[in-house]
Length: 204
Image (cartoon, rainbow, N blue to C red; front, side):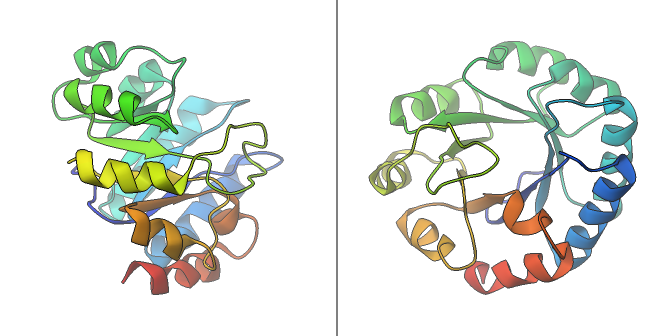
């Protein structure tokens, strides 16, 4: 799988949902046209089952499936890649375990320096945020629009923006340099199919 150059980057919403509900939500978002899915679950009951089932769904729709944080889980279920945060395993270790074709993304928060270092170390994309108040990461430090603008001038790999992104505020991020919009609650809090379609006007 190849990481998309633009589009909607969906991240699972698992809190207070059963695996069946998560799968149903993702299936609706896939039918409506997300470009990549990340499995994020801080308190999984059966991560191997759910991750494996999500991977199969994604591959039916020919989009990449990425796992947050867990390199071992990504290897076990044959995910297309992994997303790493500041406190996660080193990018070089992930590349060694998952191989040259794996998609590896890195959270860079509000730091151009982290993004440049990640690109140099073979990251496939970098993510900045949060840009707006977010219920998924309420304590995350805010990122600045100016960071996206600077990144667009210096970074050659795809740039992902995350954090409280809705159809009515995402255009500002895209026009400032984001290639993809990463969304959790905006997609999965209600009606994932219709919610996904609401973002398409921004991304065309």
